[in-house]
Image 1 (cartoon, rainbow, N blue to C red):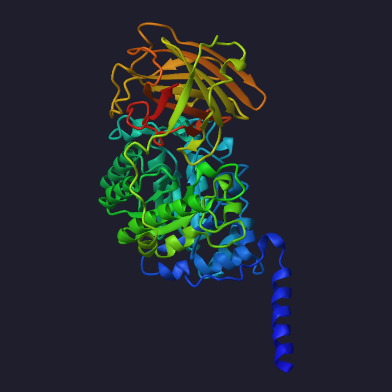
Image 2 (tube, one colour):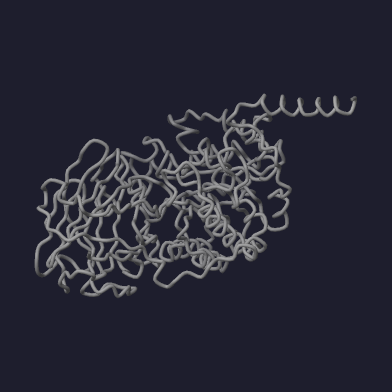
Length: 556
């Protein structure tokens, strides 16, 4: 009887302990035996982003944080607007608290970020001359770095400086975004920022950080920048590859970028890792099939990371659980919303074993490209949308940039001479102020009429861009020589609509014909900079010069 009573008391104690925590943060009873920071102790640091709420010792997220991670990046509270929203008024209290919690838990503190076009107050670099902008940049960097000293191990000195579309990577200055810092100072603002950071503290590591660094052209631009810095003794210690990936990310391309930066002898960090499952957007949870596929992608990535551990200093996840992720709709992380390990956790803990037990089926050569259907019919552009009622809906929701912004759907009709496209875009902020048409809020339509999937444009290929005010621009092959592009656009509550009539250049529309096809939505922010790209099939930003990644559109 005494044994039974003792067992009952133990059970009651566990119940009381667990239920004393708010439902959304109850501890997972089935604990994992693998501790990621220990598994990778001889390879690289395992980090995550966090704020002060993560260090509440009674929370589930603290349990996961303390067990698995040994590096912390400030998600928002070390960005310029958080530390110096008003000139000269530095507000360090929240960041100081995070640093103290990080260090007291034997973790490494990572600083993010000093110079960026987002989350920076306008007084720093808008409407000011070059000399004043330089003073503002240098003073901010000096004050922030000096304040934290050696308590912050490394800083992302400059963040996201390069354009997404880079035509000549060797001219890295020409590949820079037209950010407020660049407008006010010039392309040398990067050099100024890194020199100021080194002057403020010679002991810390200085990183350049950017997304889509697996894109060859963007990678090469960053490579040439870093190479020149090293040749000119401009201080730089590392390259941060953010790692906002998805199910279509090429692991081979990720590895190629790691190897390329490795040539420079710089430290490499994967700084903001997540893997979105865009097919699951709108669902309440991942299906078993999609969860396995995501885990396989994580396993492939960590297999590459382990193989290149001699160059990789840190791998940081951008969040702990799906519920806390900024990309939560796509279930991107290795713990679910209840802080339970997903299949991806076990894939990360032992990638070789996971892939051995869950081998990836070799895809069919034709299965990689998506296929959609166009219904037969002619549309009067600007007319009632019911004209497209018999056409299937195509979702344009695969993001190829870190930010997940505007999204939308499309429907397609065809006749013997033309393709007709209806776009419905969801976008709360519309802006066309950029001097670059591709950075305006707009849609793009890509055609490869012979479906040759070539790595360059031929005379049957075309790119059409229409912004939300119905301004048309054209890609490498220009306007059609025969026929006319007719378009209509209208802003509406929560977004805009585009209708377009696209003439065929080389073919005649025929039932059963399959052509190369893709769709894109460009999203500008309030400052007129493109912050998001959503596409249908090609998950690169290379569609403007290569048709090899287009999907397939069948004329039904």
